[in-house]
View 1 (cartoon, rainbow, N blue to C red):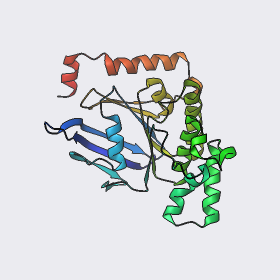
View 2: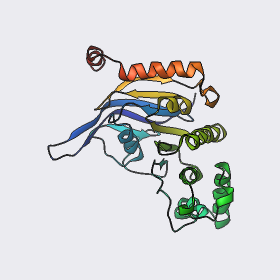
View 3: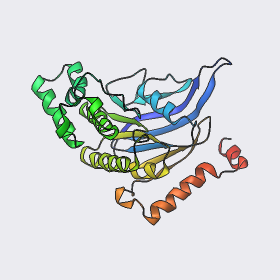
View 4: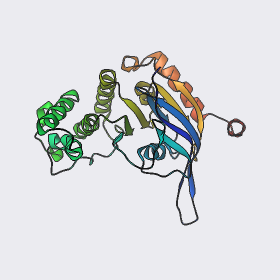
Length: 262
C-alpha cells in the first residue's frame, strides 16, 4: 500500500470577526496516501476551501495539526501547489510558456534548457503546445486553467491542491478538463486534494470522498469512489451513488446530526 503523504489531524479552523472568532471547521481528520485523489464535498459554508487553504499553509489551525510526511505544516511550501478557480492565476506580462517556466526558474535548480524542456512537456500534456508564446489575455477560461494545471504539474510537488478549478467554466469545457485531469492522473499518478460543490464531479475525479456537514464543517463519513471513472458519466450506477451521497449530505435529521457529533 502507498504510504501516507499528508494527514489532517483533528483540525479546527476559526476566522476572526468583529464579535470574535467564527468557527469554520471543527475536529476534521483524514489521511491521504500517495497517488490518492481525495475530494472534499459538502454544502456551501462547510469549510471545504478553508481546509484546502490550511493544507496549503495559508491558514493557521485554531487546534489540531496538518502533517506532510509526518512533519508539521507551518506555512506554504514547494511540496504543495494550488490551482484556484479564478482565471487570473497567470502573470499577464509573461507568455504561457514563461508562466509555466516561472516556478522552475525561481527554484534555480535546473539549467535553462532543462526548464524549457520540462515546461514544454507539461504544456503538451494539457494540450497547449500551439499557444506556448501566447499571452494569458488571448486565452479562453479553459485554456487558462490548463496553463495553471501545467504550471502546477511542472513543479513535481508532492500534492496538487485544486479549489473548484472548473466551477466557472461552461459545461463542455468543464467536462473536457475533467477528462484531461483524469488522464493526467493515470499517466503521472499525482496525489490530489480537490474541492467541489458538484457531487457528480466529486465521484468522477476522486478515488475517495470526504463528506462534511453544514457550517461548521465536521466529518460525516468517507466513501471510496475508486471504481468510478470518466466512462461512468451518465451511467445508472453513478446516478445511484450521486443520489445516495446527496441524501447523506442533505437529508439527515437533527437527531442523526446530534448523534453523529456526540
